[in-house]
Length: 273
Image (cartoon, rainbow, N blue to C red; front, side, top):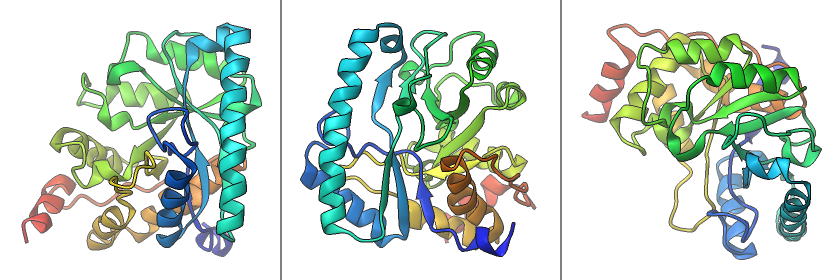
């Protein structure tokens, strides 16, 4: 990691800040409030990712209608952000729901920023069969895949064999800040920490849904990394790799976090302090 890498700002690759198009921000006011709170935490590059059903990509007219709807709301929000905040780069992609195995991800508006990466998830936090072959075909079609919040899926192979197969297909893995601090319960937290312990997380992100009552969890997650002495991993996961992804570059390897008596146990113990 170079000195220039270490000087990168925080970059967030997963949020829902386009107003009125999904279950995230409902208005430009919500968007401005959310961007302001992210900026206070040092996030300077935001790639917001409204939901998109992959099945729409096989229906050209429906897809274009949806993308135009998002385009208009995004540009409205972006103008308001430029008027209110300086130094914020507000970009756009989508979080594509893989509700069919062969979506067409070629439209550049679907991809993260100006890159060839696409953020994806499977429906209802359930993992269907044959996901490695799906990832293989998407990669063959020219898309580089980032899997959103893999730690949150309800039916999961706790031995991480499935995650290993995803990584063999060159998919990147994005974990939510909130998972590290028990936002989604002990199961997702335990899996997120195990993934960090094994060095198989590529980036962290907020998955912030742009409502005033919701939290971003960056500060709480950073405290965890500070207390376990994982500053290098934190910088790679929140600054370096997300920025590289927005530029279409390969992320850098993230060293496994030293476990000692077990990363999960260590973190549980200081939450009880």
